[in-house]
Amino acid sequence: MAAEHVLCVRREEIFPAGAWDGFVSEGLDEARRIFRDRSFFMPRREVEEDPSYQQIIPYVVFRHGERYFLTKRLKASSEKRLRHLYSLGVGGHINPEDVANGDPVISGMGREWDEEVAYSGSFAARLVGLIHEESAPVGRVHLGVVFLIEGDSDQIAIRETDKLSGELLTLAEMRIYYLEMESWSQIVYDRLVAERSGAAIPG
Image 1 (cartoon, one colour):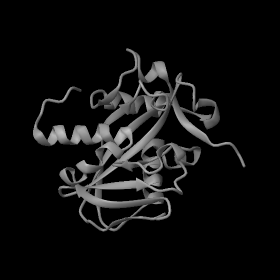
Image 2 (tube, rainbow, N blue to C red):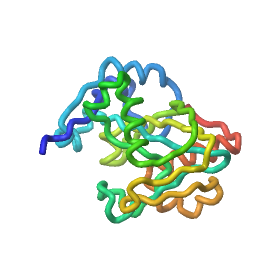
Image 3 (cartoon, rainbow, N blue to C red):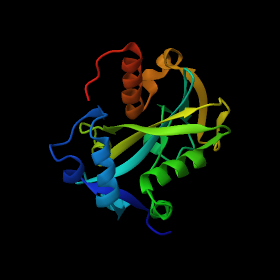
Image 4 (tube, helix red, strand yellow):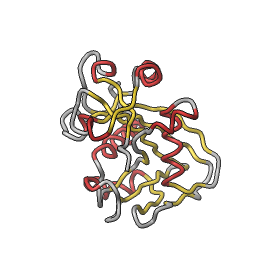
């Protein structure tokens, strides 16, 4: 089997002032320019533990009305480190085939969405921020590119039901799962709650 290649950027390109922890919503146009002009593919095995490269991960959050799609990774999930954890986002690595359709980040986002989710309805997707966890070994080598999808239908379901389960819940309803969420989902959840409460949010 051929080695998987994943889309990366150099750490100093995306973090010119030094890496940060958490969620940022500033500088997104510049980030997209860097993804478009300065990204490249590397064998995944060479970058999984090398923080000098940042693997770009589209992370899609779905909302219908007041409810968000919360998934749970089951025992058959391919990502062993995240099994049995809850997630607010659908996403994964960007591969060379995603370049064929133009913007690899948008194409990768769409491919991951179509692979994992069956959805009947119209939607609009917008980039809302970036996630990075400098303090976590896995997080140090990944950069989450967070998109919010606003759907006009609640007809959404998981395709690979042996790997994932999912349901639409309000932020209040999913609070009981917070401690079992993967860290990126906790970061997104905190952001969504802060936005809903009207709290001041650092950029």
